Amino acid sequence: MKFSQQLSAYYPEKSYGGAQLYRDMLNQAILADSLGYDAVSLTEHHLINILLMPAPLQFAVKIADATARVKIMTSVVVLPLHDMRIYAGEVIAAEIFTDGRLMLGVGRGAFGYEMNRLGVPLETSREKFDESLNLLVALLSEEEVSWDGKYYKFDALTVMPRPMSGTGPAIMMAVLAPEAIYHCTKRGFHIQTTPLSGDHKLMLNQVDAFQRGKAELGEAGKHLTLSLSRVAFMAKNEADRHSKIQAAYDYYSRFDNVFTGPGIVENGMIAPLPRSQTMAELADSLLICTPSEMIDKLAPYAEAGIDRVILNMNFGASQAETEESIRCFAEEVMPHFLNEPGSLDAANAAE
Image (cartoon, rainbow, N blue to C red; front, side, top):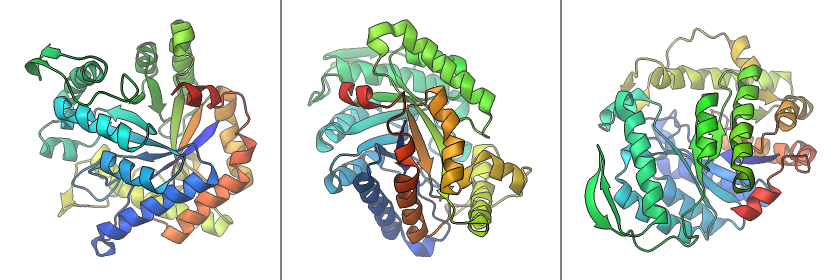
């Protein structure tokens, strides 16, 4: 089992400045590269002050220039917000500029506030995502593509230049429902998922769905990987753990507002709202703990066959504390899992 650092921006104070925010994320990527993390991951979100990254492909190129080996994953880009005829060319350029280290995680969008204001409400984003994904795959893998769909209609064209790998970077689907994971895996996509509140049974069902789809592909599916996204942090002691859980609780008071709540946003800043979940319940669902506890919490993931865990440590701690957590995890936790069954060695070679 290998690990990625999620470079997800949290911007509770505008006075901090976007330049410093992205400088912090770049430094985290450089640190992760030096410490042997398999990948770093970038979100795509607009108009709001959490998970803020309006230009993930541009940032991927910046990271590639500053690092040596780490994969750079979009986790995820929101396909319905883009014109695939333009976006396919941007993906190819990013694949070239990152020297083939780009992995393209894709999704339909999750925040109603963001999607509504950008003209693709969640009620229609699934349908547009499906057509966009099919078109993107065609544009990357074929020449002279014409299209007659609901959202795209055009005569034959060829996106230039052509992908360096022949079909473009590996594509990773962001999927939650086990049955959807099964069908996406059968189509030959890598999978990113999350057990949401930490439900172990759901996680096992997600893994089972992936493994069933992969097995049905036979040899053609051996390179496919399953990534699991979790909020995590390395706590020094119980007092530090409590402090970080409080920070995560404050973060989720904004996250819930735009994810499942009313979407109350003013001048780009999400209003914190009261939460029904208690602090103790949140603590049980997150990986905020000491190194020994972290090893115990991650062991079931390795046993289940998870290939990669994507760790989101950006939810309110200072840059110095976040870098310390990234380093501590690499030095005290990662060595226990890198040689476990289900590692990505074969997948790395195949990508």
